[in-house]
Image (cartoon, rainbow, N blue to C red; front, side, top):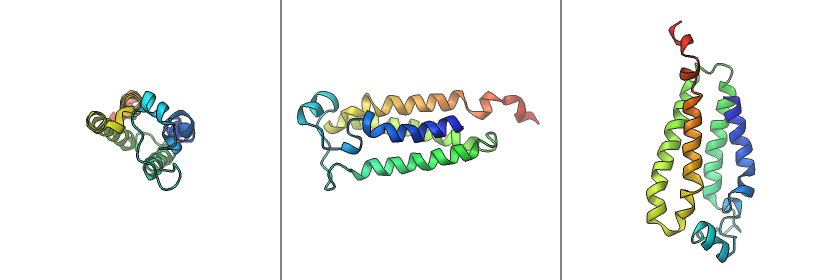
Length: 138
């Protein structure tokens, strides 16, 4: 749980540099946007600091903090894994049709969707109820 929590925090810190729209939302060149991420998102009035990025970041930050705190007793906090699996699968499932419906959402198919599904798979593999089932019968 600590690794997942710290991974989320480190991942969010690297996001502005790894994920092109990141905190530079709407500030990439038109050529790069059309080649790599599709049509640019509408620009934010705050020079690229799009509110969407912060909304998602604080949700993952809260989850990361709870995962780190819950690592003291993973079995008692297994619902944090359940939430992570369900929330990420639902989020990815919603982004798939949006990527085809909205022309400026294409990048989600090669960035967010695979990442969300990978996180869900990792959480499923390392779920406390799967890793240590012998303790559930006590």
